[in-house]
Amino acid sequence: MQVTELESQGLKKNFKIIVDASKINTQMENELRAAGESVKIPGFRPGFIPLKILQQRYGKAVQGDVLKQVINQATTEVLNEKKLRPALTPQVNIDDYKEGGDLAFTITFESFPELPEVDFSNVKLERRIYEISDADIDEALARIAERSPATNRLPEGSKAKTGNVVIIDFKGMINGVPFSGGTADNYKLELGSKQFIEGFEEQLVGAQEGDDRIVKVTFPEDYAGEEVAGKEASFAVKVKEVHEKEIPEINEDFARNRGFVDLRAFREAVRGQMIREYDQLVRNHLKKELFDVLEEKYDFPLPQSMVDMEFNSIWERLKQAQMQGDPSLSGKNDEELREEYMNISRRRVKLGLLLADVGNRNKIQISREELTRAIMQQASMYPGQEKKVMEFYRKNPERVDDLRGPILEEKAVDFVLSKVTFDDRKVTLKELAEEEEDSDSSEQKKEAKATKSAKKEKAAEEAPKKPAKKKAAGNKE
Image 1 (cartoon, helix red, strand yellow):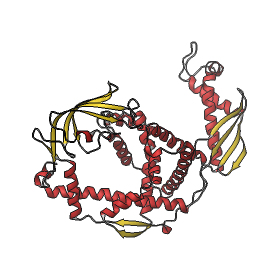
Image 2 (tube, helix red, strand yellow):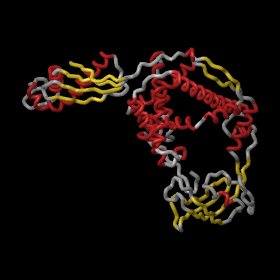
Image 3 (cartoon, helix red, strand yellow):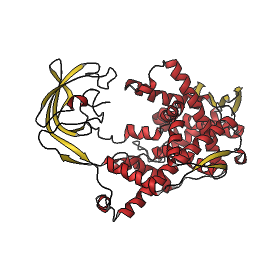
Image 4 (tube, one colour):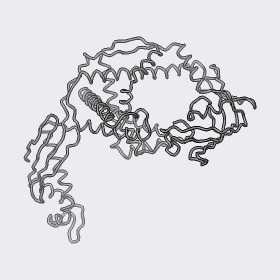
């Protein structure tokens, strides 16, 4: 085998490889003889068919597989000899081959860069420390009560006020013609909830049980339904009942109605949930700090092919979001968006390579149990179709590998956080929530949009779909 290096600029590599005809012919003979052990040809017993006959019958069919094997073997030998790791599968181009002759082909790829070892001793992060008081739990219980009020039907003649719930039938029309999704019966609508488009709920304030009203609204230009976007509509509304919300008292009955033995158990459950939520906020803050430090502290060349692949995946999602009227993408042209998300793609690739290297250097492993939990988490995203999702992964084991990257990244982050130094700062729950909201800048929102799990998207493409939640066209979207 002859190997010639044609290009070596930075991470870009290009090799020309020539494989001797003798090796290809030997491989062809081996494949044909193996086939001859099982094929049936009249006049010959399996295993005793002359090679010439096998060549005539199956030579063309076997040749393609043999060339693939030879190219893969030769490529692997070259990479091992040169101690190179391609960032992505090398591109192969066959330059010259005639049956019975030498095979000449080129491979082109970008190699993985040499990565610096992360020095944990030089990483210092701010860690926020919080405490949950009884008053915090009281506030949480009050919010739970407000979100689950009872409703009492008001006497006939009572006028609906903002905050009341009206039960209505409605039928929407545009230019006197009904439109899809514009009709509903026995619809429970809280006035002031902004559940419907602007102007709808306000026109029902003051309505009484039994009233018939005509509600006129104009759908926003960017409304999701193209059929009605930007158009004026009138809704014939029948007010059937008017209800007043009643916030339940937080007592033993309140707890038992939610499946707890008593109020104390309910409070402990709320405390546990709050700890999980605020611990996650603290971790998210630490993770972002860590990523910022790693990005600034370590510099190395990135395989552009990996950056492009990451960007193309992000860009496809963004274009879909644009088509659906995502307001966060408005006001910018494609060139500006490309520049922003190309920078995010570079950050993602850089951090991904660093964390993967941390995992390799420190022998971080992913257990079967962790993969199983990840699959079950995916299945939980499709209520009622969990078995189908589990079956999907069972029949497509290669797709389970899509789950490894996110798991490894989180384990690598946990490993690094266990080694770095912290500067602790006490904060209240309110301060913690406010700081998290303030830090959720537009740049972070962009990155969050860009870093959705590719695995989740692939599962969404091929696994059973969630049933769509039907909305009335009057709903605000």
